[in-house]
Picture (cartoon, rainbow, N blue to C red):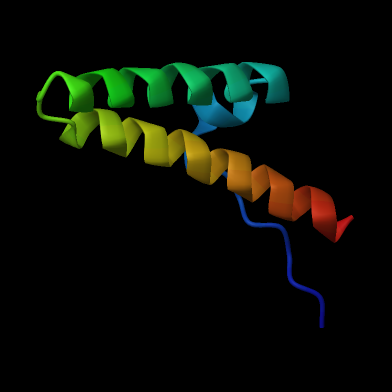
Length: 66
């Protein structure tokens, strides 16, 4: 039994090209690190980064299933 590719959780993320997704991950990570360095609350930034990273991981898993 093969496992079916999992579906994206956010349609807007699914529409991003792979290069755009990588760029958004970099921007989110830089913003998260800057906020941590400035002692700011990073909850929302961490959540945004995790969502982007999860989409990237999902694409990687689906690509390996082909």
